[in-house]
Structure formats: structure tokens, C-alpha cells
Length: 142
Image 1 (spheres, rainbow, N blue to C red):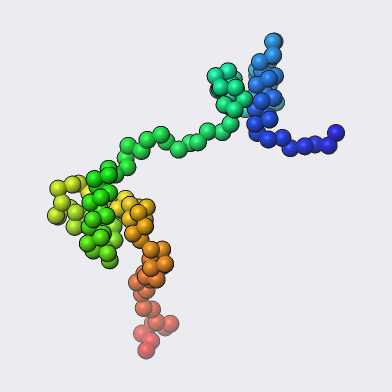
Image 2 (image 1 turned 90 degrees about the vertical axis):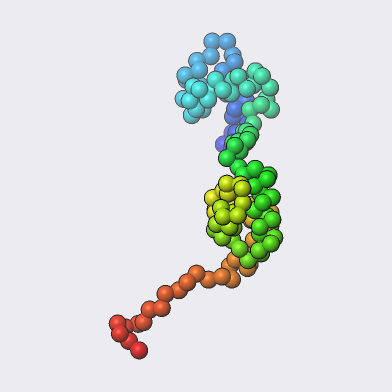
């Protein structure tokens, strides 16, 4: 029989069925499938709780982002940007520190807010070139 690559789900289901059998040696199965014992127990618990579909990979995205800027701060940042379309994250942060009663987030966070809401055009940003230092080919050259 030719070797056929099996999906991760098929391998996990096979592992759970073998591990659930009476008298199964979990350590041997873990070595055979290349997983740790905590992972094996996790798969067994998930299968017991939710059946075969529970063995699928889960998202690693956090359920909440406690460090994310509040809606009020985002609205304030967007209002300043709408009033001053040429300003970036650093200038908006400096203005908010002087003129606003909200503690502004970091300049990088303000830039992320502007990008997320479509206030920064990628093509326009690429058109700005950083300062290039003038250097002569030779010392004291003319």
C-alpha cells in the first residue's frame, strides 16, 4: 500500500481512538505520534467534550484586547486627523498632550488607528522619501 499523507485531523482522531481503547499505553502512543502527554490529555478531553470536531485547531487570537485604545480615544484621534489631514501619529500625539483632556496613546498606536480607519494612504506614504544625506564621492570634492 503506497504511503498516503493524512490530515492532522485524521491523525488526531486515530490517536484518540487508539488512546481510548482499553489497556492502551499512552506513553507509547505519544512517542508514536510525536506529541507530549499534556497534548494527548488535551485532545482526549476535547474529544470527550465535543466529539471529533473539537479536535480541530483553534484560533490563537485573544478573546479580548485590554491594552487597545478605547472608542473615545480613537474618536478623538480621528477628529484631530480630520481637522489636520497632513498630521501623523507623532504630531497628533503632541497636540493631544497639549490640548486634550485625554491621555493620548503612543504615536505608533495613533498611526495604527489611522491605518485601521483608512486615514493613511499607502501610496501617499510611499511617495515621501526619508532624508537622504549628501555625500561626495571624494573627501573635499567639488
